[in-house]
Every structure is written in structure tokens, then in C-alpha cells.
Image (tube, helix red, strand yellow):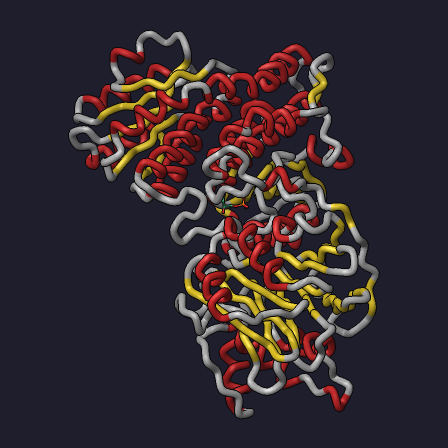
Length: 612
Ligand code: F6R
């Protein structure tokens, strides 16, 4: 979603801010803006890409200061216009502010501020905060920018990450957070603030991660962290765990393509050091302190959204099948508001690539409040969900920049498989049975490598159906969520309408959609329900649908009943989604490229969804 970059130091701020904004483009946005302080404030904003803003700045000239703030906006309050883009300014004190998140009580605050004679120029909640800080700023009475920000933040409810500058304090940048991530990169005589590490890693790998209600006043000589009551706090400078190389495109055309092809390596990383093949045990340092509670748990609830939800649904199958603990996966957003019953022995697992998805975070907080033991299956180290859970397992798949999640999905499934086997082996699974599955898990990366060699074939199959506007994805058992994931991938980047469902469900209504030549992707790997899947394929065929089957190598029956077949190597059934999903990711990628869409900047989408 929205992205923040800010800079204070000795170098010209403008190029650093623009470069940071470009690195945050993947988060999704619809307008951008920058403010630089050089005596006076200069502000420029533009609808559309950062490149539009860059052109505007080039034409305008100026913007020569060494202190500035910048933003990419994903509209929440107010339409996509230049007036609504950030930075927003107050009308009295020369303040400019950028903001991620939403201010829930903005309407009443706006009324109050209008009553005090302030005039608003946008429809946003952010302008209200800029005005409020300006209203409270009173240097003659000792209320400097830092104190005005602290006081204003006490008045608002909602989520925020902000960066604020003021004409009257040319050596000060104030940043703060609650519920929306923000980090302060500490360089050599300079500080670069970003809503994630991608914005700052080109400059420094040392950073302070803000906690909720932290306010940091940064000057060219140092920084001070405080809470909203102006009490000083200790802030630890930490080493960021990402490399610049990991967030560069290299020889690939798109981040999504790069991340699809990275999966053998990313899963090897996920598994590294965690599989003890001789004992049939899984070693998960992040949850070992809670092993006793986990083994005795009576119910495991997985909460997530989107692709992470699909991984969680696969986790539900794996936990029940392997660890024999009742499990269910839910939309975090629904779990949070349906007054969930958390009995003794309930464990809630939040699955999230970013660790910042607000629906998942709120579900986790609700579960904690109700006494559940909470685990995180998270990729971004130090993210909010990772910090708020009692324990957890990191994915270790590296930064995922592509908006359409791919390597995080297979990483999430791999972690949930390990978690299931961690529990299974400690409950009742024999060392032999566990070792067999762990060996299969260990082979997943090389099997993915084999699937990736079929890129040209998969592209050719996709090309055949590229003009069809409606697709179905069917699967059974543990591959029903994989079918859902295939449909989600296709729709989010190619804008083709697609539905994923359990194959049996098709007969209960959706079969009415099947017309001559409609592409129906069926996951038909050899598993417990293989024969039933073949019957479903016949049902599709007899209504004129064209079946693209994802089948196992050596399956010679499927070729005669499906139009097209993509073969994947065989593995243990619970682990099969990590293989069957790969061709679906590749089809979605090719469909989007063939239709001429910008795969890494899909319409309306944000990489991490930090509003409800
Ligand atoms: C789809 C996609 C989204 C995310 C969802 C949850 O490709 O990326 O559906 O999976 O927004 O995000 P995280 O995993 O960051 O909680």
C-alpha cells in the first residue's frame, strides 16, 4: 500500500527520495509526491507513476534541499487526484506531512479544525493530521515540532506511520508509527526513513524499527526516540537482513517471473537446517519453547488473507492428516469480527508474507486477547505480526517484490508442512513414516526445477486460451486450495475472470458456466481422489469445456481425456501443492504478459494491505 521515504543529511534529498519511491513502487499506489525543505517548503505531487512526478520535478527545477519527505499513495479517503496526494501541508506553520494508514476520527477533527478557521484543500484524513499538528505547534510556548506531533497523535484514533517536516525547524524530521510499519535507516551523517527496508537498503543496512506509539526526532546530528508523553526511550540499531541484490531485477523481465524461478532456491532456504532426516524430526527453533503446549493443543486455527489464506487451507489439510489435530483455516477478517470461541488448548496461527496485513494482525490480537497461544508463519523479519505472536517460524524466502505472491506461497506451505511433521513426530508418527515424508519434502526444490524447464510449453498452452475471458480451476483434497490459488493468480494480474473451487462443487451450480471451449484447469495428480477427478474431467468435456490437466509424469490415461496436460513429478500427496501450483503461477504470468499488462504493477492492487 502507501509508501513513505524521508531523508535528512548533507546530500541533496530529491534524488534519494525519488529512488526510494521507485523501490517502493511494488507496494502498489496511484499517485506520488515529494516535499523538500530549502528555506521554504517546495511540494510537488502527481497522479500516476513516480516517473510522472519525476518529469514534473525536472520541469519545475529547484527542490535543492537536504531534508525532505516523499510518498506513494494508495487511495483510501478521497479519490485519486493531485489534491489528495501527499505530502499535505497545514495552512499556518509551514508543516508538511506524509502518512500511511487511516485516521478513524478524522471527520470530527476536521469539523473542530474548520471551527478554528482552517481551510482544507483535500478530501483526505491526512490533511486533517497536518492541520492538527500545525494548530498545536507553538514554539513560543515551547511546543516544537516533536511535541506538536506527540500531542496531535494523542488526539487521533486509527493507524499511522508519518514523517513530518516544518519550515521553522530546518534541521528536524519527526517520524512516528502506530500499526503501520516504519524504519529509520542510520547512515553516515544521514538518516533515510522508509516504510520498508527496500527504500533504504541502498544507503545503509543499519536501522531502527519503530514500535507502536514511538516518535523519533531525527536531526543531522542524531536522533531521539520517545513515546507520546515525551518520555525518552531506548532504540536499538539493528542490522537489516536483506541485500540490495535480492531486490534487484537482474536478468528477469519482472519480479514475479524472478520469484517464480527462485523457488527451488527459496524453498531450500526455508528447509535449510530444519530437517533431521536420520531421526525423522523437524527442528524449528522459533517454536521449540512452546513444543509442549503445541503437542497438546486441541484445535489449531489458521488465519490469513488471499494467497496466504490458500496456504493456510493447505495447512489445515496437512495438520489434520499428519498431526491429527483438528484444524481450520479462516479469513482473518471474518475471524476477527465473529466473536470467535477460543477454548483452552486453541492455537491460532497467523500466516502472512508481509507480517503487516491488518486483517491478519487484528485477528491475531483478538486471539491473544481471548487467551490463545499464537504462532506466526511470516516472511518479513521483525514485522508486526512476527513481533506480536508468542512464537513462530520465518519463511526465509527473501524479499518478495512481485505483487502476485509466488515464492511466499510455496514457502508458507513448506513451513506448514514442517510444522505438521514437527507435531506429528512428537505425537505418534513413527520415525520411518516421518523420515519418508521429510525426504520427499527435501526433494521438492529439485522437482520444481524440473517443472520450470517446461516454461515454453506452458506459455504455448496459455497462448491457446488467451482470448477466453472466463476460466475455472478445479482440485480436490489438498489441491482444492491450490485451484483457488491458480484462479487468484490469473485474475489478479491478467484481469481474466477465474474461479477456483473443489471439483465436486462444480456440479452444484458453476457447471452452468461451461460453454464450448471454456478453459478449465484441473489438478489431476495421482492422489486419493484421482479417479473422481477423472470423472469431473469427463463432465467438463461433455459440456464442451477444454481441460488443461496438471498431472503426474507417467500418467498415460490423462492424455486421452484432456486437451492439454502439464506434467509435474510425483510426491507425497500432502506436499503436492508445492509442485502443482508452479504451472499455475507460470500460466498466470504468461497470460498477463501476453495480454500486455504490467505484471509487477497490477491494477488497484497493493503488496501489503494495511487497511481493513
Ligand atoms: C496475492 C497476494 C495477496 C496476499 C494477501 C495477504 O497474490 O499477494 O492475496 O497474499 O494480501 O498478504 P500477506 O501474506 O502479506 O499477509
